Length: 345
Image 1 (cartoon, rainbow, N blue to C red):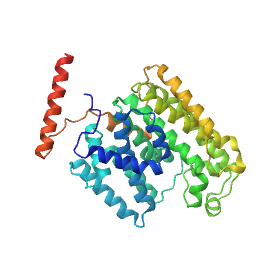
Image 2: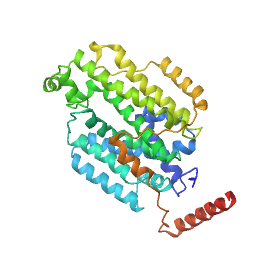
Image 3: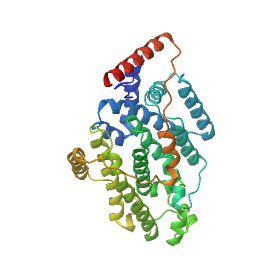
Image 4: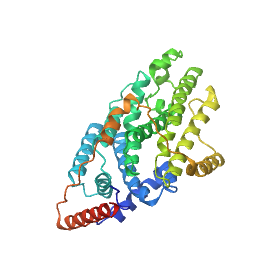
């Protein structure tokens, strides 16, 4: 069953505009992607990213992180109960999760990742880091895939690959900034193998050959996941592929810049030059129409399997809304769906 092209509720247009305004000033990656995604995708995606952004900021910049997490879970309760808080972002997100049948397990896992940040969890192994990336980025990839109309396990697995790869790139790019704030997302076991004393590094973050090698090792894993994501991108609707492929190219290039700069600049934030960005986007636009969908039996990463299972589970039928206006809209939508189904037969 195909979802309508817009989020049809009374304040939809104003709510989406509020989400877009929030993201315009502080999410360059979303703003860039929204310019090459079709409007029917960019609007619900704005609601999704705005909720994620507000949740992240509430935990990351709040003075009382446990209280911020409790409030976010309460807001999520209201979203899934059909009575979102009277805020544009909550209303738009509620409309999105209802329209595209996004299971609660996905945003719940996202909040769990934010909780791990709040408790300053330590990541010993690559699997530990992957589990974190699954929550803060794989969840977004899975939810975006549902918005784009695909919920097959194989497609969702590749979306999670892409999300995890992007988070690995973020980790590699932000090693210096994170360390200055007492955070470390590189696998600690890898750092010790490379001769890096973790406690000393966090006490006085300095670039070193060991840190650069570990960063490069993580980015090599990311490159493998970027390659694995391609069948999933090819399975997306044709008008969605250019934007997602461009994001994949741009993020992978950030990692390449990190590696090429060498150990002396290992803690500097990498930036892809503007000319190179334009070249990568042009390449994505040219290649996207020729991506061939093919069978892909590669299983999901163990750390994201629970997301794939949740997102690919058969969606429940919509329940009738509570207000008379919403009931009328729901009935009209139901009749339209039944009519389309009869015509298709």
